[in-house]
Length: 439
Image (tube, rainbow, N blue to C red; front, side, top):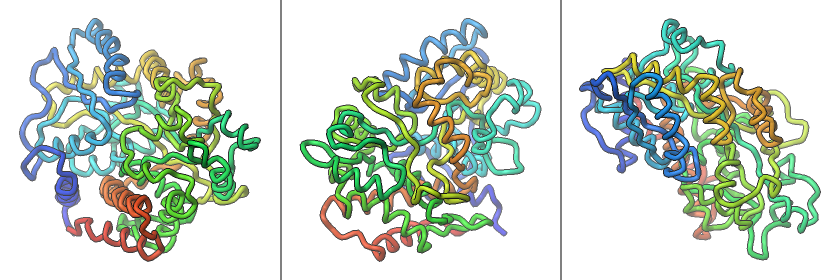
């Protein structure tokens, strides 16, 4: 049986080989991350707003507040989603990372397995106020079951279907679709006269993998077996991925140009009226930044295969969100834990999640009127009732990279007019699985 940590490091190394934009070196976790000065911290924040500059605008006053309270200065770097996983993986291998970092919550188990993140044991959780402060759904995506969390929840998100009220009225559609057949039929009515039915982010491996997982759940597909082995190319997984790519390839309700989208261009298209529907995680703040008013759109749950879906197929979102982690090699653990406590305090949870239009994972903050809007109420109900975490296995980040890239390539085929068939989808997913390290 291979050592889990060595296996995880091999996976990380392979991921960096696949994503050449990353930097870093070495093959073991060594060196010193963060910085040794007790009055400074380095913080890698993920891009949550409409731009990196927007995030800096939101975070700067809060970091200044933390400095006033503790005397600790936080050096901030906001990292865009196309680069974030690469940067985190490079830091994991080299040991040269920040003190505190944001991670997509779906990566928690993968990064946990490398040993690069500080475990939130009972004592550390007590120091930040206790695990009972967090919503159970959010805590379920912080690492493998039965182990101390590798991170704690910071922002909670779920997928919703955003729909343009004006375009729906013009097309004579009275309500948002509840099934995929309805969405496809509505999409055809909404496509034309300068706009498309549905916008997707076809070049984003993360978005692609998330939708493959959600549709996979609806098709009863497991991308991993119970003991963590990959099953990327099962017939049900093939059906799920083909259904997603077919919005462009077969149904013709998604613009071919969406195959190149990877940096919120689909959000911009929806906000400008170039697309009538969008599946996105808590998009309110980004839509506002792009000039769309809240009464211009509605938010409904992502459709199911059938209106009476039940059991394990009644899933329309993964448990999405951002976790806050401490780099194990930080030389300022005390300051890092103070920062985590500050960022997950009820006051900061209200401020930050309100700014980003996300849902506070700290339950005491959820009762604030800022989170009572119709869209956030819908997304909160989805998160609590019909969302499920991505597999909390060491290879999960590889699933996102490999399967997400396979879907990206299939969208490229669709955009170029090349046929997307069950055989071509199976071949793409088989290739993705074969790229996963076996030892």
